[in-house]
Amino acid sequence: MLKENERIESLNIKEYKILQNSTLYCFTSDSVILSRFAKAKKGDIVADICSGSGIVGLHFYALNDSIVKSVTLFELQKELAEMSQRTIRINSLQDKFSVVQGKLQDTALDYKEKFSLITCNPPYKKANTGEVNLTKSLAIARHEVEITQQEILYKSAYMLKNGGRICICQRVERFLELLEDIKNAKLIVSQIQFVTPSETGKPYLVLVEAYKGVNRQLKVLENYVNKG
Image (cartoon, rainbow, N blue to C red; front, side, top):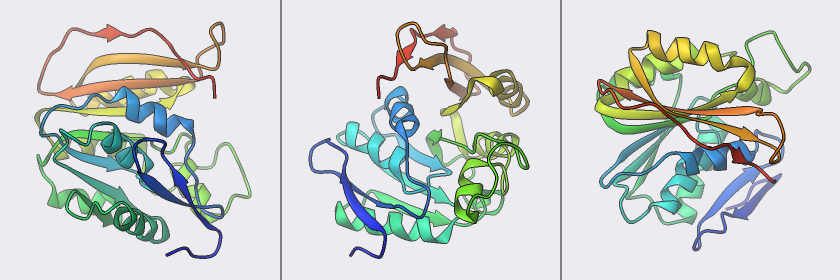
């Protein structure tokens, strides 16, 4: 089952495990925090966009496996999508999970108003900014090389059922831009939570929940302290 540079990691939830590859994009605590921020509803049909190795979708399902109906992972990179397929088999979740590999701009067209919940840990940096000399795989995962935040939100609005919601994370420096992109996609912000590295530390990450076609009273949750 394992290929070169791969390892199996436990999610520390029941017996769930995930494949990781040290030469590809490996998940960070941001993904786990996002999966905890998203709150499941009974019968949820879930999509995880920019799914990478599948961590957000799998971790969210592991936390809520008694009520989530299905999870679909959308990933551009073929190697990561294939690795996610094997993670699904390791966990015997073929009846609950599926993987869609390709550009979201194209693959989303087959999923109009399909999902009740979308999660997304997107590329944080705009193209041609931030880190340099990255491998192609890391550049795609961390920078808006293949898809922008705006495109992600427009496609999410297309894929969500009326009354469905998206939970997305982003670096604090792009918070106002995220709110503007959510508004332009005709989604309505319902919850916001900032993530700090300590009780007194400055926020570095923001989590946002937004609904399609439903006005809810805006809640700003207490900061989430990521102690690592």
